Image 1 (spheres, rainbow, N blue to C red):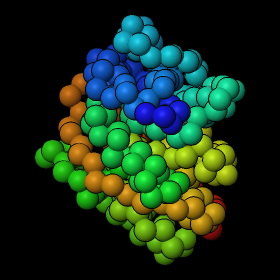
Image 2 (spheres, one colour):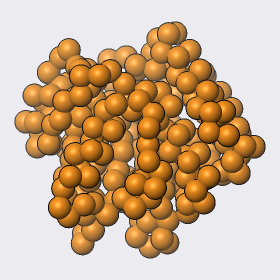
Image 3 (cartoon, rainbow, N blue to C red):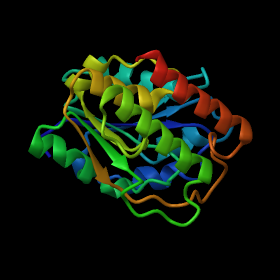
Length: 230
């Protein structure tokens, strides 16, 4: 691969899954895997480092904080990346599908590619009813307010470095994914989706859908973010 592709993985208490994620990323496609340890209380940092990732530490709790830490790190590198991939650390995504997300950028000049679980194959129980409804509502509001054609707010995504700089991400917590998509629409960036598969979490509990508090906070922040940028 002649493109400089970086992978950023925010991780909070994922010692049992992060190694699998790193191992399944096709190494011939990426120049570096960056895991941002987001104040984990377990051995996530050690496990990720032993698996070969560059590990950063972000003590401020929040998905967006961790992603921003990763972006700041790669922004200081020379040369800067051509493409940045974001994915979760819980092994629900299929990291080996990474080329599917990169190809529309390489071949069709796309700037943002969302891995859509809505049009892909999902294991039974991989997404909770509240996740499914939340995605349905959020993507329809994105269509209504911004003219954006998305079916999912999936965390597995690829974005060109130039586009990521234009988007100028700001959210520190649960509004991260929707902020990227609505700003891409507002800026008129070339965006698309590809179908990705999604499996049920094998270890631990989701920080969002796994608790009532997480579900409520995430839902509120996503909707608030959609209206904030309108």
